[in-house]
Image (cartoon, rainbow, N blue to C red; front, top):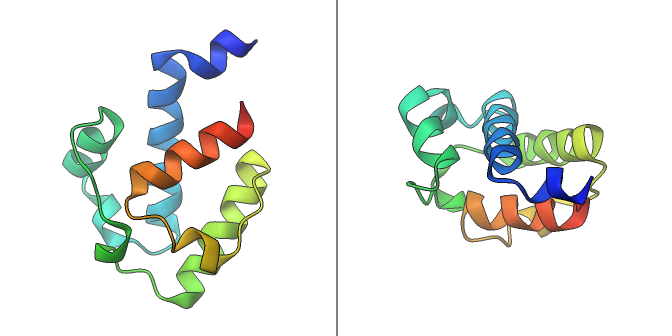
Length: 96
């Protein structure tokens, strides 16, 4: 079971789903399939501060993280991460 969480395929699938969560939460940047592909393949470092996420969008993001992966996080905690990849690694560490 742990192998599933540590495999490159699982991490790509997780990053893809996280990109969709960001898009659904209002980050229009993650509606660009090229950006999603580069993010999923670790070719793009997306600064969290560059996304179009207001306070309501951050709350929606945190609710989605809890609903999908059981990871509780406040909007203030989420906004402390420099990049989306940093946030992704944190969530992956919590669900492993």
